[in-house]
Image 1 (cartoon, rainbow, N blue to C red):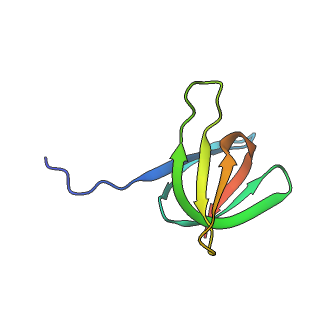
Image 2: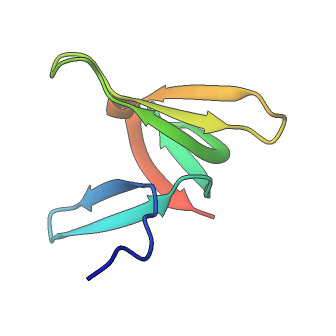
Image 3: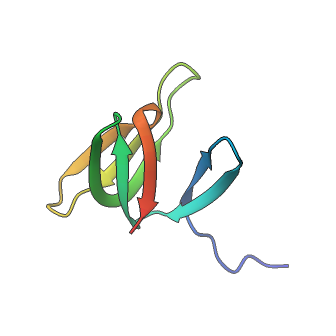
Length: 83
């Protein structure tokens, strides 16, 4: 076998009391992120910065439509949907 494609993406795991689902969202995809219970923001997946150890939060970097970046701690994200 030979490698024909490598697609960078982030894996999102969602669960409720009935079951769960895994989503894979490609870098550069437009998403709406819900965080801190009542806030949301729309942007493009930039990169996922992993914490240096298990006690440091991972950071999701979004590129907004005005070309600014917005950083969100992964632990504060309550939902994410691909647009």
